[in-house]
Image 1 (tube, rainbow, N blue to C red):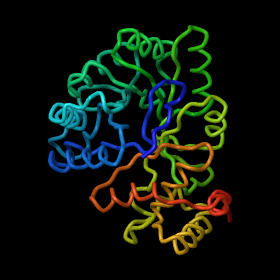
Image 2: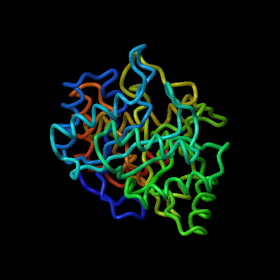
Image 3: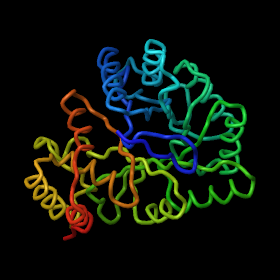
Length: 314
């Protein structure tokens, strides 16, 4: 797995990240440890979690389970310096309200560091765009954490492009570090016009232009759309049932038949190789799914195939 630079920072991250959403909540210690070991062995180093993962799983989960499990693994493996660790703040979970005020960012960073058993985060995201808090306050809080050595770089998630540009301007004016990564809902299928994902924001052309102009890294969550590409028992969410869905799936199937790759592998490959390139997060439930994901790194599609996937329309 190759390493690429994270935004304009000096951090080198693997071209595929590991989504740690269910570690410690749905996934046992054994399963969580095995997945992290597999990912590290495959050359990965970019671990993605959040303070609120995954409080919604059961009555027993309260948030922080993922960070605690990663912390146990880091202590057991003694390999903190080998990985790039990203967490997030902003969404609510039991005992913590929504928002990215200075107080909340500082307090939640402290809690995340305790759960992870480390004294710094490599990347700290604003998990949501809090319109109720001045952007200056949010960015100032993040930069104070950077000055204190608790955070190395900052990112944003579920932000629209114009808000990212505003943040960039505010940071530039105040000589602060701005967002080095944007993590967004992003897959091969395109949401239809007028899509709504609630608090989640999908990547779009405006964002792609911002990424290309500024060099910010694009991280893709939910790249496989909860397994709908390959699981016949799962239907694509209505937001993805657009006018070009059938055509894009047909192109996937044509290239899959020609190359022997799976739909999922082609989706991963496309995200990593079309411009602007994205870092997809692997969220594998089984060993087979993980092997399928990293198998996408072995693909070598022609320029014509990549172009056909990108330009597939109704």
